[in-house]
Length: 138
Image 1: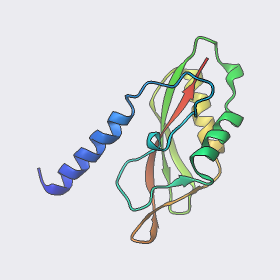
Image 2: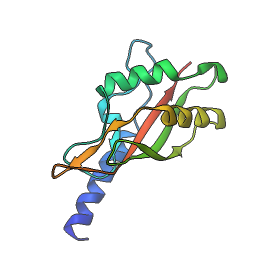
Image 3: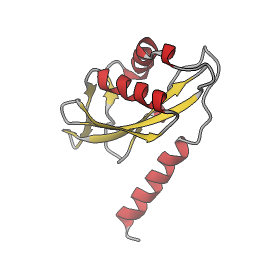
């Protein structure tokens, strides 16, 4: 295994291990933490929701429509998408499903998000793939 593939393997292994965390149940805890928003390839500056993680949490809380769901639905939908070099969100897809309704709602949230600050490599804005967990709690 050459050096680049080995580094990529270690990075992806680290990223995947972050998805094994249990969802938080307290209403006072944040929906997301910075380490849960994963950029797939290592770059100098990861893409970021404008305003940071607190603004991202507020956006999700404000726009998530719980009225569609049964009270028994509790868990996480993992969504993958691309942030292009202009900060636009593209190619949204479900990477780990919870239910059809939860998946639809998670995709709806991603599609109504405003532009993000793009990722940068060597001072140049670049496309970045992002994994974002959307948590559904009772």
